[in-house]
Length: 356
Image (cartoon, rainbow, N blue to C red; front, top):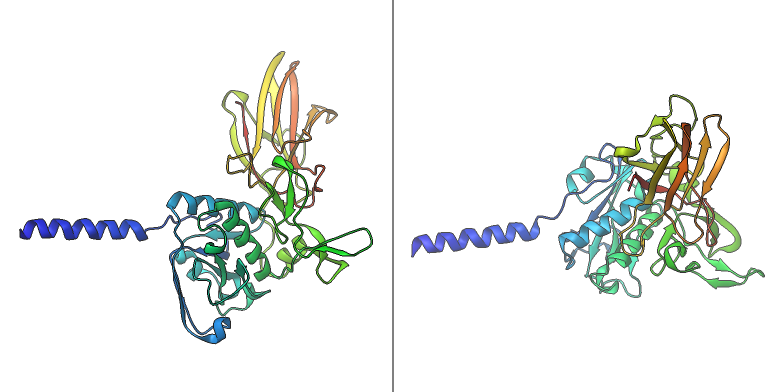
């Protein structure tokens, strides 16, 4: 009987540990600045929230897989910047106090009516660990897309951003939260608007609720007001023999378009007439390309730097190249582009080049 009891106690102990052991994920571990997405519940006290009174936030009912998907979507929104999006509290506590924010995902929303999330504008640099909140019970409880969009939106507020609004041609306010335009994988909305129902989202330079002529340059504010800027360029922009060489027989590499002037250049050599097949894929959740921030353009040049082809499909954010070329040296230039629904301003993020 004693042995059975010990076994049962051990079983329930392991079960409990497994339940609370959330995935520890980081998007840019070496960055000083940190966004900590807190999924395991938190007691909040001594802040401006709730009149300064102590309150307990319950953990959301999310699986490890759902947490990972939310993390990946939020991380992609902040991929261009030198900031670590993480689910690891250790990374949060190691960051400078004025370069970190805790975003609590919780179903405990009764203390704040009428919103899906809340945060203080500019609180990222306050240095007092005032958190922001994402109320999962008002976002479908387990709706990965909704929770991720709300998280990035609220982080945007902490970095100093107001809402992005939509006005008509006469400057009459139509939407306080700009819900974007278009459908399918190129349907777009601003992160600081209402981006729940659009596949592609991004930072923008547009009007705020303060007036149609009162524009807000998201990228300028994010990278100049919070102690961090863009991440370092990963591939050179120039076309020469020092450009990164690729081999189509084993092509599988990752890159990031970090600014709207960034160009990643790759060189390849064909010894004779050859068929080449390349896929350039932005990050998405894999479901109808949901979650992409980057609409890819690829330009192909010959060895003299003369443009020979441009690949920019109208209704897709990815690019497929399937063509035959004669022998020689060539360059592929990967960059972010606009489409019918948005410009290239916020067409930023990660991508992967594959041969099949």
